[in-house]
Length: 97
Image 1 (cartoon, one colour):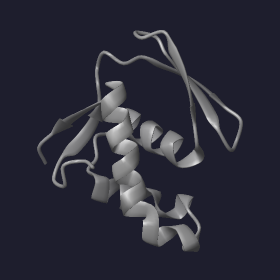
Image 2 (cartoon, helix red, strand yellow; image 1 turned 45 degrees about the horizontal axis):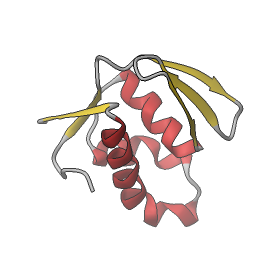
Image 3 (cartoon, rainbow, N blue to C red; image 1 turned 120 degrees about the vertical axis):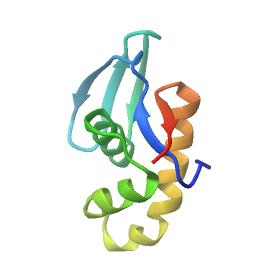
């Protein structure tokens, strides 16, 4: 679970190269040499954070259209899980609002 007030930004040491096939995306992270397959929502989170830092709440508001109505209720929890996984990978850094 991520810190509730944190503003998340891409780690400046992370260098991502993308391939997107519409449903899933594959991302190569150059500094680690690892390739990751991302689902649609995770790819949207990473792409958003590549452009600008955001809190989980801001991500929820900005990405709400990316999920259908049945997934809306689970979006905050899903975003917390995604952010947590990206932190473990070393892709994100937390700041303050």
